[in-house]
Image (cartoon, rainbow, N blue to C red; front, side, top):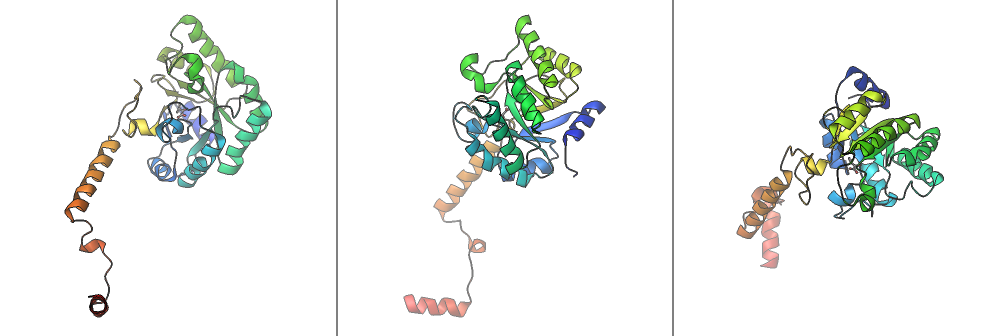
Length: 280
Ligand code: KIV
């Protein structure tokens, strides 16, 4: 498979070819996602919730992210890889945003980084882009602002907030964003944005009109059931399969049927006999 670049994504947008985008947090899943031909893999700070067990993404840091982003790059060398800028890795100052974004690019081999926020992030996106860091903007429901939003709630359901999200998208494209991810907004807004911007758009809970669709891998394969947003379609129940396998293993061990002969290392019969004599 040829390496997916920003040009691949732009070409797909111009051909009207829908793109696929999933989160991924480790080497084995990255291998599977690349084998399945997923275009974009995001090492999302959602890892804090679906892998590390936190109830928000806020505790995730750059030090937590970096080894995971490296592992995903090793497993999926050809995918378009996006490193998610964790909470307070870009909000404090522009130099810090550039330094942290630069770590994703230089240390992990990312193709882009993603950060949350509307027009208030325009200057940061401009500066990062000028520093050769491609930035995917993330607008609409921005989970790092959960305390301000009062929960993980859909955004843009009245005319004023809908227009603000559309304007934010236009401002961020103007500021250099190389693509736009829209989360938790009515599909009408995502459709207008997708038509009006020239960069690729990706939606998670933003309806069918985006250039590509995003899901959190653990949600779509049934590996995380503490909370399932309305927009998730479950394509598998891997969690249930794993529990069945574990219960089967427990049964076998308790019954003495595992390990069987084929799982044991053999030794020459004369050595076994001598050993028996010595220790009987
Ligand atoms: O962290 C994450 O997984 C995200 C989703 C919107 C894909 O940002």
